[in-house]
Length: 266
Image 1 (tube, rainbow, N blue to C red):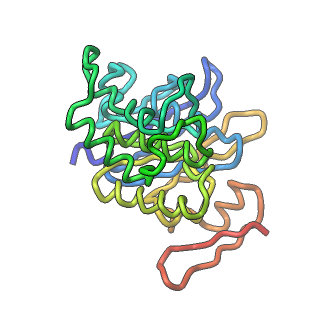
Image 2 (cartoon, rainbow, N blue to C red):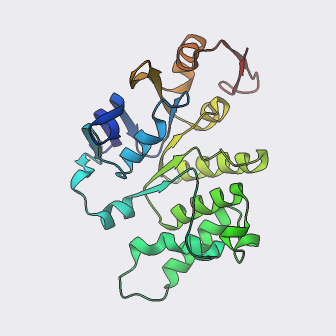
């Protein structure tokens, strides 16, 4: 299929102005899969994800969505196709959780539209239910915890009804219960055909939910580079992980699953 790879990075260098933080990344993401961007602190994972989201332009190279260079796409079209969730959300207005999530419907509304229609309300309810925020819908975003804000941001992106979801460290503020809920949600979204690209530190999470992983490695006094890319079961080897994180790791295989591994730093 011509559109098998819904997102393609072609020799992409990402950074700010003409200064690259990461360079030479080539990576293809199939439709309806979950891809992780991994690597140590400061490797440029978030910068690369923001570049895919077109929040910052690439220093070099091209980013293609469904075979088309996104650099010329109008923002309303891009917003219907791609949703981006940052590590932290903030708002200058005292919005309730429900009002914050409803902002995700903006790309689907006309500028003169001052009330939501049935489709908007259905998308809002689906997003609230998917992220288990029903009991918090009337609370102010300023009053909820960091993990609850993270789930609110994810819900807002789901209300947007994108085809491609970009998540920057989505497990960072979540406790174990909600990390498990997030894992189940990502698997559900993947089963429904959504393409997901996420920055992650958690190797266990990557091994359980991701179809492929791109790993960046920070180099001394130079931009980070692509260290390896491929399915987790093939590329998350002890040697690759030692090179990526510059520490010795051992892998414990869970006998109840073909690839449900736990990684420990020694």
